[in-house]
Length: 379
Image (tube, rainbow, N blue to C red):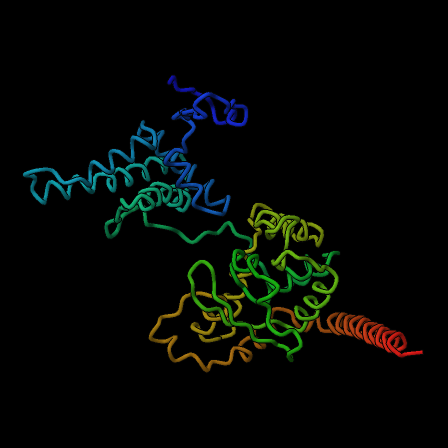
């Protein structure tokens, strides 16, 4: 029987009626996902996919070969040869490590900065690792060198207060307040689900222990009175079946791009001069760590609060650490007192609304019960 060659787009238009009731369908080979597509699709974050794709595209340009060819060559380099010495096998297996260093130098010659060049090299390294052909950089490799970035905006407590008061919507206020409290990575903040929030009725500051996504370490921090008040108002005002706290219109959370764009808008509304610096969520994390160090807070407690890795031999003995003391000391500088008056107003308003709602529900339940009693009585 002659095979019918069709494109994937026309699958729904196939006539499946025949005497044999069987059609053999041959899908074009070029419609199969490429190795790079499969690799990139394994990452959820769009920014990560873009970064790795950019690095791989540049390496292909530098090397003059596509990703499929590069993978075949890597596999061939790692395949043992008959009667080959261990030295020859090792030298062949490290060929791409040397190529990566040359690529890194080529990027610098093209005008890329040191940190950017290292980031662009990660695409090839992660691609090989995904296909179980990872490479190991030698000690002192230029690919692993970085410099402390000076392009990020240096966020200060007065900036946070100004942005908070410039925000007109509840979600923006909550984001600013939580960013100032926790110092967590943006991925950890956006992945918060409503069901995992701590008990909001506890006396502030409310301690919160949560596992981080990136490093799989425990973050042990607190929520301030302002954040607790805003959370109560936010949850009451925006009921939804979406599990995420900062939910989108779909069943997911809002994007990192949305949050960072909102921060820049708030800075502009508050009259903060950012100039050519980069203002993004990570600036909260840098601010909290910097201020905590200025206050002399123990470095391991700082790491524990923001969800950075603490050495296991030390972490074992930190089970009884009270982070509230460090949190109160830190928030005293970060501006928690500036929000106290406004927080009290929010709390009183929220408590009043909730109490009125509860009373209305109780009254309605009593009326329903009385109605059922009258109906059930025999005449």
